[in-house]
Amino acid sequence: MAERSVRWGILATGGIAAAFAADLVDLADAEIVAVASRRRESAEAFAERFGVERAYGDWESLAADADVDVVYVATPHAAHRAAAGLCLEAGRNVLCEKPFTLNLREAEELVALAREHGRFLMEAMWMYCNPLVRRLKALVDDGAIGPVRTVHADFGLAGPFPAVHRLRDPRLGGGALLDLGVYPVSFAQLLLGEPDGIAASAVLSPEGVDLQTGAVLSWESGALASLHCSIVGGTAVTASVTGARGRIDVPSGFFHPDRFVLHRDGRDPEEFTADPADGPRTSLRHEAAEVMRALRAGEKESPLVPLEGTLAVMRTLDAVRERIGVRYPGEHAAGGEVTAHAG
Image 1 (cartoon, one colour):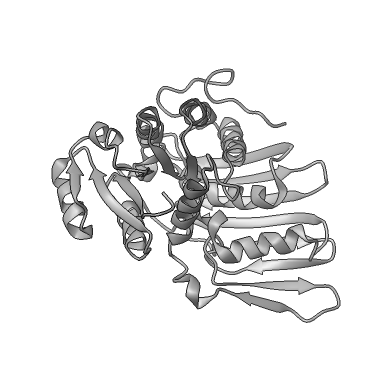
Image 2 (tube, one colour):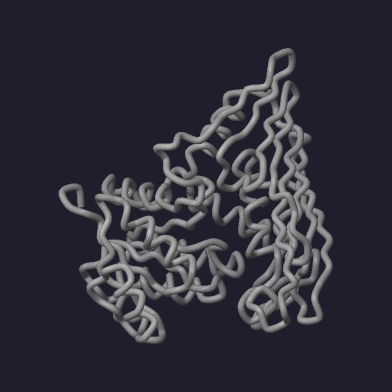
């Protein structure tokens, strides 16, 4: 693949698929060669919009297309296991949207399939590939603020969302936690790793999904993370990291920031801003570029979004759901498919 463009297939045709395709078009070494939807009309309209050669009215045809180097799975997350699994079993490499799956069991199955078939697999946690987030992590890892003591992060949408909306539909993995809370959890674990303890509380909808959830994660180091997500109130969507010798504040849109401020004891605040050459803050091109870099290097996973890190986040999300009592159709109570792995 080093001598030609990486050839992408897009599985699903919703808003996030369109945003990803638009950013792929801007990458000189990327080519979209096929798109699939369960409705051929949707696939054909998408193909016409983005100049894609082949449009399939089923997932299987895309998975079987040997001209596709990697498939971007952009279905609702309740279908991630089926869609990504189909592609991996057919020998395709996969970038799968977040949240990676509904639960840890499904995530482990996808990782096992990727390793069995020798395929590349990555969660589309674009925050981890963002250049400014990577700079923030490097500062924390280098001890710029000393040992981390606390992390705060929130992500809430004002709504209101009707009962028929996907965010309130248990069959689609609805609720604030998986759709929005995955960002605060992933941010905290990017900096601190998997927690040793988890406490959580939530307000549930009549359908049984979480309208808002608060969680406190703890580590043996003494660090704590206070995290919140909501689909009934628009929050500031900010984050902060406090260490023994300073603090980093990330303003609104912490998971795709255009700046952050480093406060170090005894020094003036330092502002770090995004490089205009990196494109708009909403760009998904950084995760696409990382996938293509890894494929050309012959890697089966990305060091920026490692599979063990994805599994660790899914363990935390499962544990939070265990505590707040959210179950999706087909899942079992404690001891079954959704189990708490942290104290």
